[in-house]
Length: 344
Image (tube, rainbow, N blue to C red; front, side, top):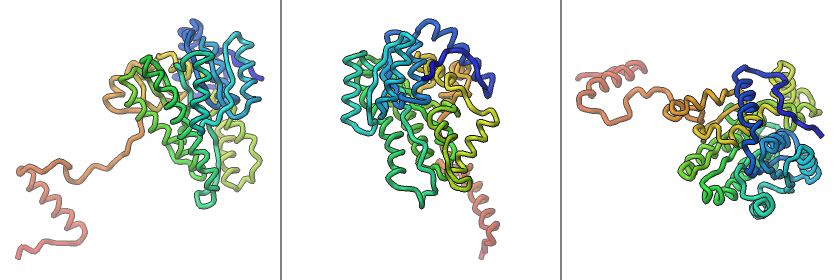
């Protein structure tokens, strides 16, 4: 078992991220800012989820951890209780609606209403080209990431809306912003969760609820650790994916899991509610982004958007004064492709 202490150590990719982490350590965690709050962390039995749960507990929150493995959950609970925190284990399949509703009910009866939801449950695979991948495995990854996030959010939201307070943090990935060939289930599902975050934030903003999509970086625990330990032929899709991850770690691109956890706690404490609906990463300086929230909202930044080429003609109806200009565009286009106009 690993106890994570809140000390800013380990490799960092940028001073910007260090600034945010250290600020939160001094200004929030030391004051137990989440005291009296209840957090639910899915995928909380190992990896990043376990670290998220520990840090939220150290910030004062009572934490419910959910996952399929009861043994791993109990380890997380033991770690939290050893540090003086309150925690409970919830063996749970996040794709089972009835089970999710029952689990949230248990949390409310034992710890209180859920104020913070961290949707962290996930899978990495399957890894293969679409025409070779197993359909059931592909959809299982989609279900855990998308359906699981949806069901957990849907279940806790009525209480949050009634209290006009709540924060939902969906753990996503750069794979959801960029393509990742042979890992399509992971990439596509993370894209869906990023867009789900934006839609949910728009729906709940008037109810005082904030929703974030957070890329926690490449931490050498959990899914990344599984990839690092993977025994697959070098030339196979899985072998190539694992090799890429190993290369990133070797180049110093790994992120200490505690750093991501500080950002989760920072968001959970309401320090960046102005950025609700946005895609944020462990390398962002959230303090700076908060000061630029008006600009970010006005320009619609940190969201997934379609990039389009400038149209040849204006999309709005043409006024009479612009018809000659339109004619010149049309004549130039026809001439370019080898046509000429015959005035006779």
